[in-house]
Length: 68
Image (cartoon, rainbow, N blue to C red):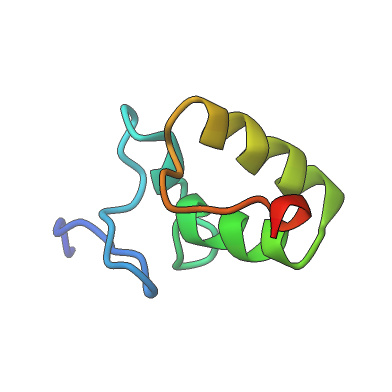
């Protein structure tokens, strides 16, 4: 059995770290990456969530599509 941690296929963040809400495993990529991609595409639920996370400082480089 392999006990080494899994990493995001996009940014290499370690996945499923309880203290890191962006590390949720979304099929091999982290929520931090997937959420931003889906929000940028205009998907309503991810857009709402990423906006909340951005206001909390979790996405410092993300720009809301409505402000571009």
